[in-house]
Amino acid sequence: MKRRPFSYRGTFLSLALALWLGFLPASGTRSVSAAPQPPPGPDRFAAILVDYTAYKWWLVGFQDNQVACQFYTDHEGWPDAADVYRGCGQETYDAWRTTPYCPALSQGGSPASCPGYYLHLVGSGPAQQTVGVALPPPVVWLTLEGCTSASATNFCPGAPVLVLTGDEPLPNETILGIEGYLDGEPFACGATCELVLETTGEEGALLEFWAYSSYGDSTVAYEASLRVADAPLASDDQAGYYVDVLGSQWAGEPAAGCAQTWEAFPPVGGLPPWLFTPEDPSALASSIPYEYLAANLIRRGAVDVGSCPDGGFSGGAVSACGLEAALPAVQEWQNRFDGQILAAAAETGVPAQLLKNLFSRESQFWPGLVSGTPEVGLGQLTDNGADTALLWNPSFYEQFCPLVLDDSLCRKRYTHLLPEYQALLRGALVRNVDAFCEDCPLGIDLRQADFSIAIFAETLVGNCEQAGRILRNITGDAPGESSAYEDLWRFTLVNYNAGPGCLTIAIEDTIAAGEELDWENLATHLTPVCEGARDYVEDIGRAP
Image (tube, helix red, strand yellow):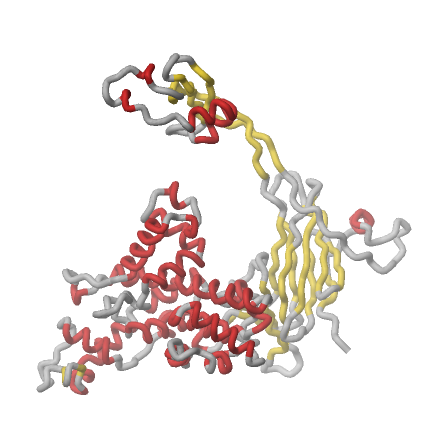
């Protein structure tokens, strides 16, 4: 028999509130609760008086010098087309818009010979206007009681308790009650609701919830996915649980990177080592004898190879003697970025170990330009990679665009920019991750290298979004319904390394073969031009 995934505990609605919500009959006798009705949603606006500067404009005819219309704007600069249309009407607006350029104005002639209309600023002054503003809506937050977070999951030493807390931002208003469904079963409680959870299947349970406010409206209807799994404990007399919550209203420790995007639970009990983010940078330390890194450090004079009879090189590559001499410097260099990697992981959710493994594979931590290639930086960013970051990571685009283009252009989405502006942004992004600097010590601008780490993390976020969208478009389902969390990161790395075309074809061919969408199957369907991504993904997915 299927176990119920929750039970009630603690703060429920009073009888009066239960009557108000329609869950109990007027007599107060116990009865089966009715199913909650969908909430109306937020509905709160206010009219406020604001000060502003009003600019008075005339639209004047060239030939008769008569004022055709008068209107006001509330912004500096020339009126836009909407300002003229609102102030002057369709007919006059059309005549103004079709006014041709008049050569007489620049040749010293009379304006009376010009057809159409021109704009004239009469003056400006302080003014007030009433505007409608949306008031902040009520919300409900989700937390767990008595649980700790580790490795992107939550461990509860006893029966896990999910706490739903209503939040009313308006003064003198309160949350009247919270209601909803958990795995199809209705519940109702007060401004704080506590649900004792029981184990679920791997697919988890759906939570639908909302709250009512004394203002007369409600929150939106939220959804979250919960998974509760048994966890081993040292003591046999008490049960332990792993709990994962995916949803916009989760207020606990952040979920595993891209889990929300993919609607995919991470592995039960926590993440594997290659997707782990430690608490201390020292846990990322490695001691791999990178030959490419050693060669660059030797060439730049950071390593003394005077004891090597071959000068540290043999046949154009670093020799065994050179590698041995460079080993201390190589070990120090590959770990110098660990603090920035950990900071970028905390900011974006991209696993720190994945990010470090990617830099290892791409550049061996030498963040300059690779000769003869268009790839630059620690993660070897290309023009196409920059396009993915700007297109599929909108929040990053909104931060980066004003550093390159005017704010008025950046208000548009990346896809709505002219091609030349898109190219400017891509070029600027690639330059921002290139730490090569001929005049710097060792030829590397370390401040630029440190700065670039956050950009590569944001680029991986864009790739995780794009990979998720490809899966949604092909399967029609959330990525987490067709593939496991670890495999979704592997698909993302295919997208980063080989591009969305390679990933799309591999997914389609895997489905056409009637196979599950996991990495083992998908890797066999990488086309010859894309199959290099298999070694790439498996190298990055190695245990640290």
